[in-house]
Structure formats: structure tokens, C-alpha cells
Amino acid sequence: MEIIKINNKIYVEKYEYADKDRFHNICEMSQEMNYWALESIWNKGIEVWLIYKRSFFRCNNVGFISIINCDRLLGKERLIMDMFRIPTEYNGIFINDMRISILDRNRGIGTKVVNILLEEEKTYLLEPVEDGKWFWKKFGFVEKGGFEIKKRR
Image 1 (cartoon, helix red, strand yellow):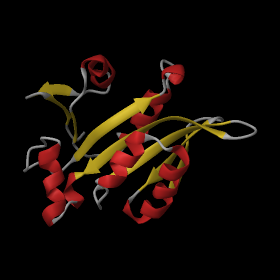
Image 2 (cartoon, helix red, strand yellow):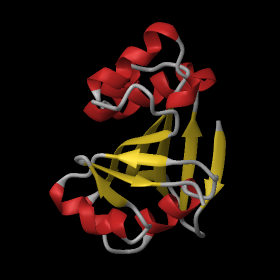
Image 3 (cartoon, rainbow, N blue to C red):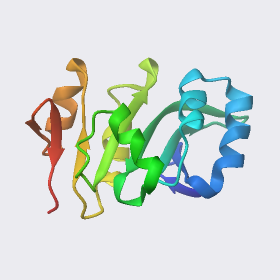
């Protein structure tokens, strides 16, 4: 697990396949339905970034982002692409889901996390819901066949 500091209070914990047991413990503690759903489809291509706010006494969940690195999927793992309607020839990053708690929206947290995610020179694909389209467009995503795509730099 890797920890990324966003600012003095906000940080991200990146969970990969090797961190599955640690992520399971997070699921047990939080009882967050979205986390359980991610755990049920977990494979070598999935990463989950948990976003937390640190306070003196504890950590508060701010949100998460889940991604699928399609070029890491092998054999039956590629069936997950059908579930999300990802074109089978696609080998970039699919941004599966991103959520920021209502109380923490419009504070720049999501923007900072996405800027870190997009630092890699990869192609990114996502299927935004209506209220999220404006958010993704500011990062250079363009609509293509119901999906939004951002090509390598």
C-alpha cells in the first residue's frame, strides 16, 4: 500500500492486488457497500484509492476512486471489461468510479487526486454520469461513443 499526501489533512491510500487482505480489513471496519462490491471483483488490474481526512483523533473517509488497468488483465480477468462495456481492444486505464462525500465536494480534493492519477502517460477511459461530465472535461476528456477518453500526452 502506498500513501500519498494531498495536503496537511487529506491523504490517499492506494490499494493494489497485493494489498487485498488489508483492503478486506477496511471493508470489515467501514461496512461501505461500494468497497464490498470492489472486493468481490478484485483482480490484478484493479486499484482502489481511498481518500481520507486526518484529524487529531481519527481519520474520516472523504471518498474513493477505483481504476482498472486493462493491460494487466489476463485470461478470464478480461471478462470484467464486458461487465463495464469497455472495448475489448482497449489496454489503458479505465476509471471505474469516483466518489467524494457531499460535505467534502467543491473543495478541490477530487481535482487534486485526479491530477495525481493522470500524471502517468497513459490513455484513460471512463463513462461519466451526467453530473460528472463537467468535472472530467476540465482534465481534457472528450466524448467518444458514450465514453470519455483522454489520450496519452
